[in-house]
Length: 148
Image 1 (cartoon, rainbow, N blue to C red):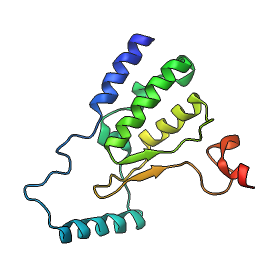
Image 2 (cartoon, rainbow, N blue to C red):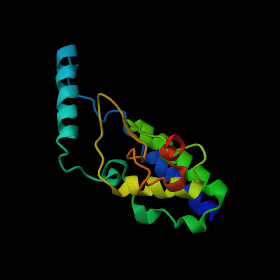
Image 3 (cartoon, rainbow, N blue to C red):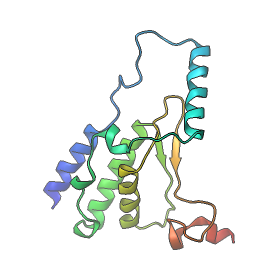
Image 4 (tube, rainbow, N blue to C red):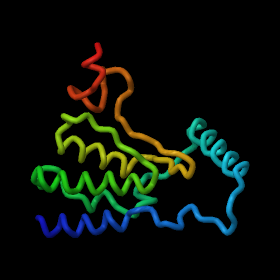
């Protein structure tokens, strides 16, 4: 299985955002950058339909083995590489420190197939918490439980 994980890590590395993804033919003025940033914010707030993250990074959910097939070390390798790749797309992930690797992997796979907006003028952070521990994706690891 490690040979497959090594191949998957190469695919994840290829999924990093290309350096010319946001490049334009001319350099924007500060006003144009501000206008673009405001347009991004409006698009995000309006919740326009957005493509899944796999469309941007080129990775398919089917390429990732079931979590039960991977060792803890392999899960850590894949999740670490995946989070680094997401950062290249201006996406952050905030996991509770005590969240098990298998759950991290599951949450990342949900991001891969779920809608996502790529920001040029900012970052989006997935923290997986709604602010209410009832029905939270983090379950018993939700930080809301500690503050209730």
